[in-house]
Image (cartoon, rainbow, N blue to C red; front, side, top):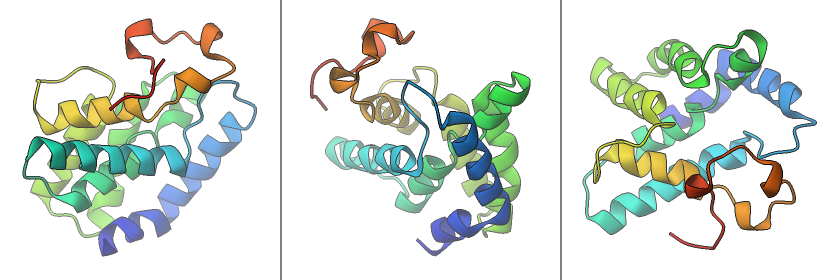
Length: 158
């Protein structure tokens, strides 16, 4: 996980994370924190193992750390955060030693994490993990949340 830790320490990543934390410090709904990023990576890895799928754990963790990092640009300029995340991630991944093929795989996960993907694919598992990482069943703001009911976790499940 050397390259994943390089992402964590990357100057642009840290700067983007600080901006995101500042934008969300008073957010009533789910926040986009390192805990969420790691939950998505860990849940994706569990889903991969349960499916008996072959996948690169380091790429999953890279995507987990990066998938919501562009959200501050959505707040600032209205750019969809998956697009902004891809823009930020391209340079960070390159700087952290990911080759072109690896970058493309991570960027595919970031790009598709808000839209249901092909059943049984790694992007679908990543999408599911992103939704499963949210504990809607215990959220005091759940009734005010604009997520569609079918995306909410209103029970503990996997």
